[in-house]
Each structure stands twice: as C-alpha cells, then as structure tokens.
Length: 116
Length: 112
Image 1 (cartoon, each protein chain N blue to C red):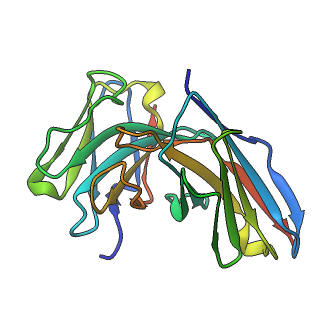
Image 2: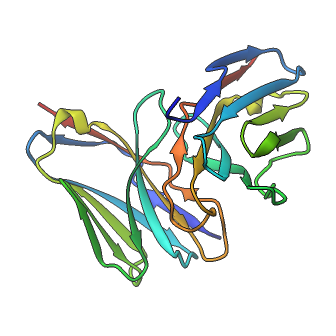
Image 3: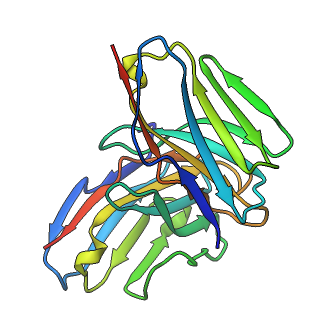
C-alpha cells in the first residue's frame, strides 16, 4: 500500500493481558516512530527507530512497553500486563531521512486500544 | 518545564472567513515547527513546515508564521470551507532531538 498501515485498527482486551500492535511503514522510509494519543490530548512520543541504529526508547512510560523493528521495516509494539491507563490510540509514523531533520512524518490511522 | 500550548477551545467560524490558530511554546529552541491536520479516527496529516530562520510560509490557502522572539506560531486558513473542519496540531523539534513534540490541538469548525 501507499501509506502507513497499522493493525489491528481496534483492540479490546482484559487488564493484565499482553497485546501486540503492528506497523507497516511506507517502503523506503528509514525512520519509524510510535506515539500514543489519549482522548483529547496531543501525541506522546514513545519510541523512535532509525535504520539499524539502536532505538531511542526515551518515551516508553514503563518497562511493560517494548518495541522492535525487524529488517528495518515492520515494527511491533508490545504492552505486557496491560493496565487501564494504557487505553489510548497508538499511532505509528514513518519518514524519509533522519528524525529531526524536518521531513514530514506520515501517520497510520492508529490502533485504538481499550483495556477493560 | 517545556510546554506547547494550543487553544483547547474549539474555534467556530463562518465559511469564507479566515481562521487563525495559535501555537505557543516555552523552554524550547526549536529548529523548526510543523503543522498537521487530524480528522476524527484518522492519523495526523502533514500540512506545512517552517524553519527557525523563516518568518512566513504559504501553501495555497494556508499561511504559517513563526516568531521565535514571541515563541509563537500562527496558522491561517483563508477563505475557509466546511471541509477545513478538523483538529490542527502544531509540532516542534529542538536541535539534537529526533522525535516531534505535539501540542494537544485546536478543533476548527467552519459553518456553512
């Protein structure tokens, strides 16, 4: 596809379960970002991948959150032992070049995560 | 602490008028500032970028200004249309950082 693809679009799970969210970036984009957006709030940075470099994990809120990017393309964000405060829309974005250089970020439509 | 502020109240204007949205920031020295549009249930879409050494940038009906002394960016939509109704987010990055920091957005409603 031409854009950033995220799956699933919606996920409802019980507190304490683990969830995996997937992001397919635009082909050729070396930078990939995960953000979290709570209702009526701005986007909160979680993690940034650039090529084969070590990711910038400085935005991850706790050690229950982790992410990986395989082969420089697809990324998965994993939340272990989910809590109700994890309920939010998780957005993935990709861009050309290096993060911070002004290149537009292209976003997927997000995964809406609801923890019961 | 670092802060980006956008008017949290919705902006309601009549079709054909100019909409002006404000983005203020504190304790940042941004290399550039970007504006995005977000529709309900969708991810943000990039609109414009303005760098710290630029005062103004235009694209069709859109105009962005950037005043690093006032620490403020203004986003204007001229001849607004109902299709311009959306939430508009400003985002900035400081030198040396990689990820954007976003404001919470201002919802614009253009009445026909």
